[in-house]
Amino acid sequence: MATDHIRYDVLARDALRGVLRRVLTDAAEHGLPGEHHFFITFVSTAEGVKLSPRLLAQYPEEMTVILQHQFWDLVVSEDRFEVGLSFGGIPERLVVPFNAIKSFFDPPVQFGFQFSAAAAAADAPARARLVADAPAAANPAPTHPLAVPTASAAAENQDEPAKPSEGAEVVRLDRFRKK
Image 1: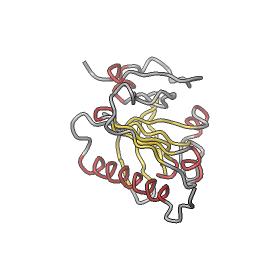
Image 2: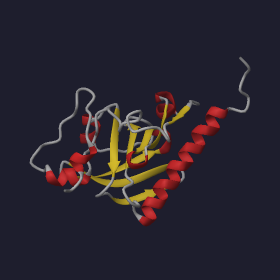
Image 3: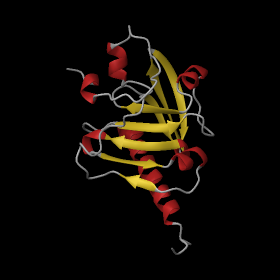
Image 4: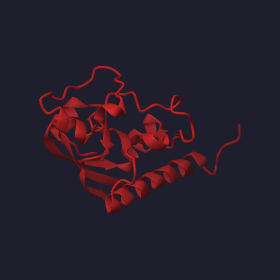
């Protein structure tokens, strides 16, 4: 096999991070359009990630946040985003560098991508996998433990304490939608 001197893997990874940056910038400026909402999974111990000690203890390897109904102060810069979310009724501020992100998924339009763990943890060159234009059954919502419910679920379930998952957990989005 020939050596890739152009480094298409790096170009694709950077392009997809640019897509994420653009989408989050638009959400910060105009809010989320229509039914769009985002699952963003990141390495919780990656360089530059800022979480409270409580969240880091609860999610020591990776964390998935859902930006949907109630988030605040979304700020996007060239290399990271910052956002306010509520975890078990406690407001928190997260800082997530783009190079810590493992996956992004927008369920209503079945668009998403993921990076290898090495790329997310160390920003090493890695291949990104695009999961757009596939049937819903082929690309369900991420099945790894969700770090936070959507804010509407947090408001509905304030009596239930947040607990870490020990394995994969499938969460139906309909559970979190107001009826």
